[in-house]
Image (cartoon, rainbow, N blue to C red; front, side, top):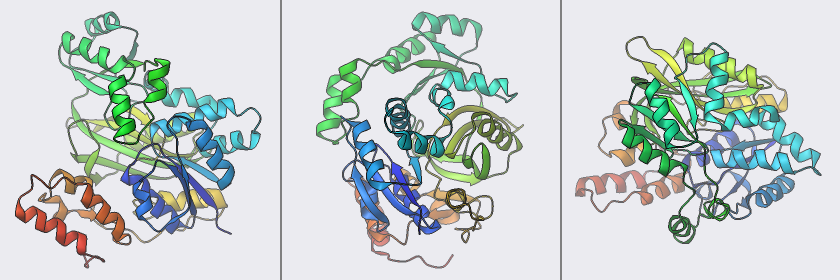
Length: 408
């Protein structure tokens, strides 16, 4: 009998659909709790779909867990992880749900550190890992005191943010003060209502009503190249891992669109140390800066959830869905065929949206979900083609009409 995974997401990210496809290929039944009009609706892999409510998230997710009866939960964004942590704290009368959350993510003693960027960096430093100086800020005065002891520029980050939305680089004290005020403010009513009415996203309304102010930390700016990792682990042991250098991003503060698969001792060691220290289970991501010419990796933050590379099946030790299936079933890891032998990967639709004429779309492995043509068409329709040239529009139409890949 197939095990079931329940994907938990509060956003309409395409990578969640891609992860679901890979998990289904690995042998899982895939259920999902997600907002309406999610890209995963354009795939054929979902067994049961449950509706997420931004107004009553804990109730919606708890109901989905009860109905799905999954063997493992996989949060696909930071807010989903926070919801699961909160459900664990409040589900006093449901030990089965609490046990499932702990089995899926790791022990509750790790929950607070996973969500608090400053506490996480302090813990990583205690493990002997390379990390930038990082401190929580209570007010703009605390930021001015911080920069008196550290060089500018500095990076300001708000807890609970994702996708680069809660990150600002302060190059002057005035920049930092403005960034702190913005990052630490509760959601604006106008923005919360706009997201609810136009985007059908009500997740900002409860924080607005409750006046929740996210914590903000200041972090030393590391000059170098960005890198990222995602691990599949069980009870603190890493079962499979992906390590990448970031070559291109959708925009300066956004997600990566082109990645190079690498082996980096510092990144591997950091992932192993953190997984062991926190006894992690499931999927967890880490972000790094590769310093100058040394390639020494500085761990800058943790993403306690699936990231956008989780679906990439790249051979033994690099097939995360297969590793999770083995952990849940107790069977040996059966790695799928490698998606590609190329080390450079252009993520779809990120790099296509960034530049439909990018040379990486031809020179790299272009990660198009050929088995789900409706998902491809959905991704292409999301692109605003009004400013494109006729040639670019023709390229989009050509790609949208393709049902199967040509041989590499």
